[in-house]
Image (cartoon, rainbow, N blue to C red; front, side, top):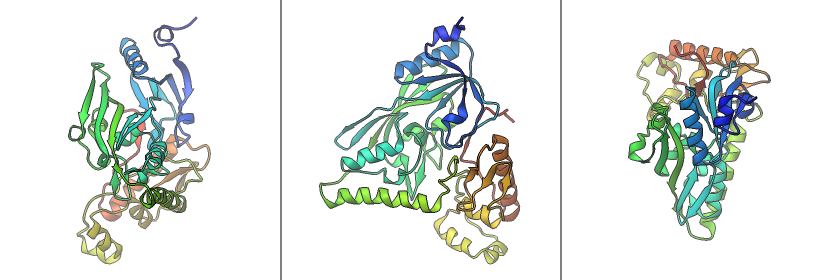
Length: 325
């Protein structure tokens, strides 16, 4: 006999392993799991969660995410609103649309602005949520407006770019977890036919190659673990000991991977998780790693970098299903 939520929300499943939906390949079961393919699906899921007093987590592409080994004791909604529509230089995109697919679609239509995202295994919703960036470009650079639903009121509103409160790896949607991104409007730069369009594709290939060369793509990971600190080092002893810091001071940003490497942690393991030797701001799953293993390495990296540089590293990864401290 079906339980009440199954009757209320047709298509909902129980006990789905979340590790199968994350780039980390880590995570226990969801109490309930539902795939939203339309705005109405999302509304129905939110209504059911409200009726049955369930916590809700919206799952996009599963990157930048660490899910507890115990899973999530509520309703996980897999965002699969993935339509992409172009009108001249404007893109109307569902939150579940693949970021790389949009980058290639834009390039095929002579639109520039998303080349930096080549190789990023996320969705538009996730990219907006964390104001994803790479190679000096941020997703917010292309955002015109964002449509989002409030899980408490079930109201759907449009947010202008300024109302999104974008900052370093942050947005109003990250600060207010009740706001669920439904879709977005992006504005790209249209380039003429000919060689400029080939330059777009060339940039995509260049960024893909960079990630293949520099990132540990042969192992599951969540991408960069920590935000790169935008600070200046003024400690003269540190500047003398680590002369590279002078160059980072000029840029106003220090790679977290550099700080972790200089703290002697590259290659450090906990269980089957490891701080990558190829890029020390990645913690990789060597096979069968648990969330607790990753948490152990995150804690170690924060502790060592704080002791060595006086810098408090801020995790970029989102933590789901863990007890609040």
